Structure formats: structure tokens, C-alpha cells
Image (cartoon, rainbow, N blue to C red; front, side):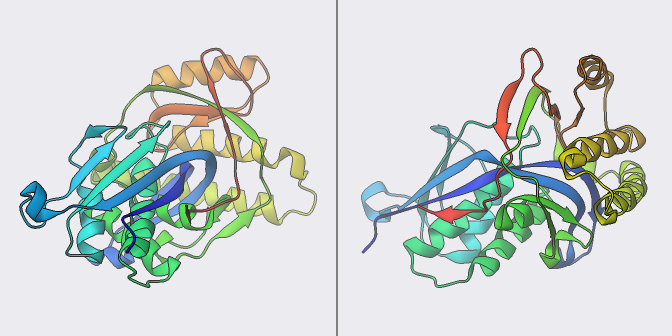
Length: 290
């Protein structure tokens, strides 16, 4: 019998989003634009021997980069898939709570690994929906899992819970990011005033994106640049961007780069290197078993 199972899920950067809420978590999610990157999370799961370790029933051990953490979203995924106690080891070069969809990636990779470890025999889409619902229930995300399921540069004209996406041909492009701090996703997506402004701004931006990708005259080489520009408009119109990020973006634009806020994080990304930034690559690959 298998003792350990491993899975990888990519980080996801959201550029534009709206909040779609319903009393049923299966009908909650987001619309918008985002893309997966080369970095993400590696999840390794093993069974806990209750008798040997004197572990209380339904008590799981979760580590993020070797530190034990209380990760409610992961506990939700585990409870939905097995009654066994497990130890979950999550490793990532990208931080939690900074807009890289690490909670969603951790949830999806955990679902994949549990499915293999206990031979549960659920399909990839079933596992993705379990991870998505766990995110919604715990307020840690709305649309990352759909992107991480498919991989690539994706536009969601329909809510993420439908898992209907439009994939754009933007792959293997370098982007550069910088983190200025953390943002509490739960606080933002549960604030009705902010939510209304976000949703209105998202609809305007999605119309512009649709026009851009439908226009046969659009230069495909400029597609990423133009999407970043529309995303920056969204971050401003929604009121989500702060002065520090705006100042940094203006400096990037002076050097002929394009940049926008990473949703939802006190962070930004650009299509051009800037001082203090780190590199990622847009990758057209979703979650997978190792």
C-alpha cells in the first residue's frame, strides 16, 4: 500500500476579478482574468498512525515550508475526501496571502495527493470542485482553483464554479513581481461596499478584454501589454490599489514597462524587469501528480 503521495499545483496571478456569491458554495466564485506560473506548491501527504502517535481522531498535521500552521482550507479538503488522519507537507517559493493563489494551489494539490494515497478514484474535475468549495467556505479564494485546474492565461466570462474558461495564447512569457506586504482576502471579499465597486469595474474591464481578443486587428505580441493596461485601470477604478503600488507602477511606466496590482495582494507584476523584482514565467500547465 502506498505510504506517501505527492502533487504539484501552479501559483495563479489574478489581474481582474469580480465576486459571485451564493448561499451554496458550489455556486460561488469569481469572473475575471488570471494566469498560472512556473512556481507553485509541492504537496506531500502521508498517513498518521493514530495508535503510535496518540493522535486524536480527525486531527491532521499541516506544515507550510516546514512550519506547522492552522490551514482551515486544507482541513476542509481532507474532511471532504477521507476520515483518515494525515500529515500534509506543503512547500513553496511563493508566499501565502500575497496574491499568488497559494491557498488554492495547496488545496488542489492536497486533493490530488489524497485521491492517490487512498485510491479514492475521483476525477480531476471532481477534485478541483472540492478544492474550490473549500476555498469559498473558508474565504481564502474564489477563482484560483479553476485556473490551476486548467493552467495557462485564462479569461473567465462565466463564474469560476462553472469551470468554463477561455484560454489565451500567452505562454512562456517572463513577468517580474515585487511584494510590498500582505492583504487579507477574507476582509476584502466580505465587504459589501468594496464588492460592489469591484464588480462594476470588472464588468467594464471584461468588456474591454473581450473586444481586444475578438478584434482581428489586435497584435498578438501586444496582447499581454494591453491586458496589463486594462488590469491597471481595474485596480484603480475598483479602489483596491494603494499609493505605494501606484508610485512603483509609475516608475515602471517611465522606463517603458507595463505593470498592475496582483489581486489580491499588496504586490504588483510587470512585463519588464525593475529594481528589486523577481522573475516568474507564465506557464500553460495545470496541477498534476508526481
